[in-house]
Image (cartoon, rainbow, N blue to C red):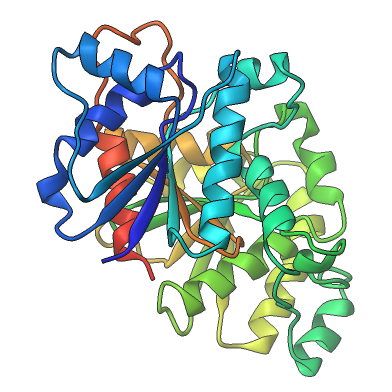
Length: 339
């Protein structure tokens, strides 16, 4: 069984608590090995708050990472974990929640985990694999200026990652991450902003999820997918849809009106191999309503698999023993099931 590097996240949040609770359910992951990378002091405190011992056996190894401030400890743990994966000590990464505020307080100004992992992957791994399309594909796509350059080759030794959320057979990807709603159109107008993430998604579906001919739905940007106003769908989506569908082997459908798309939606039979949302709340409100505490965030496009909880640090309930470990359990399960 594989070895997972597990980072509890920010020491002041619920990450240490849910880590203790998840490790106490080790029998659910037969044969799996864990390297827990993070503040041992925070883990011991969480165990004491729960009035139970820190889980210890031959399948759990602790790699202590301490720092004066919680943001520094969380970042340092990720650095150590990615380095361990690069040397073969662990296969995949499972992460607990981090605090963007605490990271920023120590000068680590990243919007979130995804951007941090892009930077660390570039530091510890060789140049990212070329995901450039074939000559025929490239010719078609360059006509619409959406795949003029590979998203994985914007700069030397860099990686472009995307956020894919998974629950049962429902996969949801965001085209934009943690940005203000007013900035979404400008973000989607950038070269490759739609095509780049879609290329990474298609590569993941084919080569890691085992879907030979992915069928993907795109949600519209405007109400009713622009039917009553707004030209962003025609400008940003349609050239990509036409180009990808002309190539074959993958099929894009839409754009669909987001307000009606999820009516009667079944996560066990979603009808599509993935759904693509234009912005954060458009996709994650219906996703989290369906998935509840079992939602998993999967980072695709990196040279290793990373799964994560889909919630924040919840500092207001940290130390009270009431945090649910369901999302972390689901993230561990996903990391073990994916190749």
